Amino acid sequence: MSIPVLTIDGPSGAGKGTVSRAVAKKLGWNYLDSGAIYRALAIAVSNQRTSLDDVIEITNIAKQMQLAFECNEELTVLLDGEDISSHLISEKTGSVASKIAALPEVRKVLLQKQRDFQQQPGLVADGRDMGTVVFLDAPYKVFLSAGAVTRAKRRYKQLIEKGIDANLTRIIQDIEERDQRDSERSVAPLKMATDAHYIDTSEKSIAAVIAEVLDFID
Ligand code: DC
Image 1: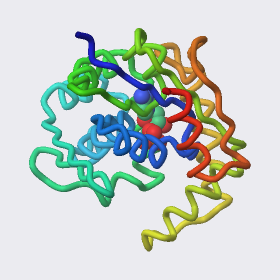
Image 2: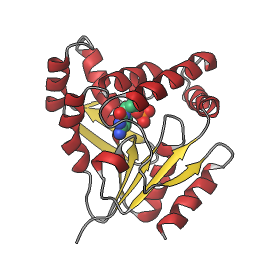
Image 3: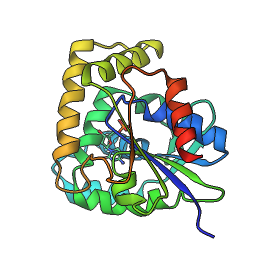
């Protein structure tokens, strides 16, 4: 029997993480935060002071890195045995992740790591290309979006709540740059799958979006 997958794609700050985790919990399904895989690779590359132009070395690091995920209230990520969870959220990590995510060789290496998450009884997969590439045949696809300023304000609030220093103008700029890079790259760009259900989350509460996704699956 095939294992059902719900893909939730969209740009940074659209609410994918919170919505995906809540829906996975409600359904009792597994959860894949694919952005965390790219972010973990960004941390590994930065730790090793590898140049972002060194595609061969970045691809080697992607092949060799050992990742372990634990999803409770928050996501815990271990990179080669070390807890890197608190470093994942920074804008710097997001920006490096977005740059290395544009490398086709890197995406190829990370493809199977992401597909391995498809385990019984089901999977909620959150990212940019879940419904268009990684789980193209998924029976349920959702695309979440919101205006760039709304998304930046959410990211700002998230960082401040975690005690991380943040600057809203800088975040708006980062989000717009990241949107552009993620949407215009040649391989697996951020775009809505033709068979996805679209939700604009700008004016909706998280609870309303979660309810709409659960309704859609029903
Ligand atoms: O969802 P996020 O902000 O954690 O993702 C960080 C970056 O990783 C994002 O800017 C682009 C990249 N990414 C990707 O290319 N494909 C995915 N499926 C998920 C993330």
